[in-house]
Every structure is written in structure tokens, then in C-alpha cells.
Length: 103
Image (cartoon, rainbow, N blue to C red; front, side, top):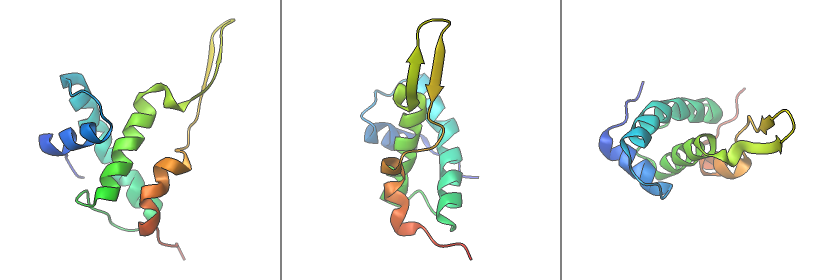
């Protein structure tokens, strides 16, 4: 499993135009390997983080799930929230050149 370095985490945070805080750095360190595994499964091949498209995907996926971007509905009476569980196609777009068909 890939463990991101502090420099790689700072790059991911910079891609999202976020401010680097100790809490955010820890969040990115935990979530980045998970989304790399997701990208590998989605593309059906081994990917490395050195590729800029993979970095963009990981950064945007983390941003999608850590912010309220996944919120699709909200209700006030007896409080109800609905979230999107799938990543939108705009976030998956950087991985498109790497996707291989599964036979």
C-alpha cells in the first residue's frame, strides 16, 4: 500500500486550493491511499501517483467526500440528509485515458 509523503500531501492540498492544517494533512494522508486503490480498481490496471491525472483524481475525490459536495438533499423537520455515494463523472474524467476493459 502506498503511503504518501508530506510533499505529496501538500501537492494534493494545493490542487484543491485548500489551506494546509495539521488536521487536513492527516485526513489527506489517510484518504489518499484509499482513493489510489479506488483508481486502480476503476481502471483495471496498476497506476502510480507520479502521473498528474492520478494526483488530480485523488485530490478531487478527497475534496468531494470531505466537503459537503456530496450532499444531494436536506430536510429541516426531524433532520434528514442525503448524500451521493458515487463519484460524479467530472471527478472520474482524469482517469479515462487509463481505463482498460475487463474481459
